[in-house]
Length: 389
Image (cartoon, rainbow, N blue to C red):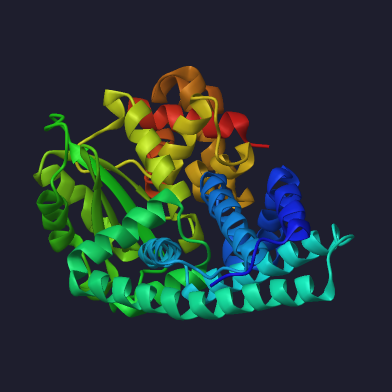
């Protein structure tokens, strides 16, 4: 049986709960002191705030009324732990976040201490310690159970892993490594992130089976993952697989964009680049036996008005070795060709034989994998040499 509510505790509880700055102080402290939470994107912070507000309200209510966590409280905390297991946030980090929050809460109560007694302070400490002890067991159990369920359905667990990666829901490379190890998969590094779709548009949704079939033809053992996003397949492959991608997509009448220049902590960026490139690329950018690459994606982002890299970086991606001083003659040949509109006119402008100019164009193609005679590739080369600093 609980004691009658303490008026001074109720006053403090009401003041703390009514002050929106307290929740922000909790979130800020967790964000600063727990590395996993420091890496969360803005889309996840409202959830952290909601959990902080609810947890603070419940714990202060228990303190004010000498209560204990109810079964409903424990069910909710178990649900939070299960969700964190599914999104790959380590349970140790979650529990540390609660400890940090408890410290902030104690400081906020202490700041409103007039009227409280030593007994009230001891009661707050007892409430928080008892709650944290109970939470540690309940959340660890729920986390382990959810992890086992995910591992039991390995195909689904691997899809969820890639879903979280491309949504940016992994808080750190360390958390990602831990989750991958539990699933028995070693993520490719360096990697190729491929976003692909049928050239005929297909249906409104890509099937997991179709994505898995593409993966089976391209994947390397335990290092590749696949999932779907609407009408598109998304594959995470070893970077060495990129050479086989264009031919396979051509055989299946698919088109795609493969990003190879981003790190494991930027898979979400790679996915956005590839997906936006497929959304905005003109039809003539897609050619049999060729896929869009980082360079195409960055040029398209630049044309759309939201570049994901500096102009000089984009120029280096497209031009490659042509930016080296020893290849200056090739860059001059490219400039003359683009400006003049034909090999003959460009050769005349450079005082070269037309065959010499055509040889240089072939060298440009060999060094950049971009044929200046192809309309789309010529445009990307032109943009790159124009924005180069």
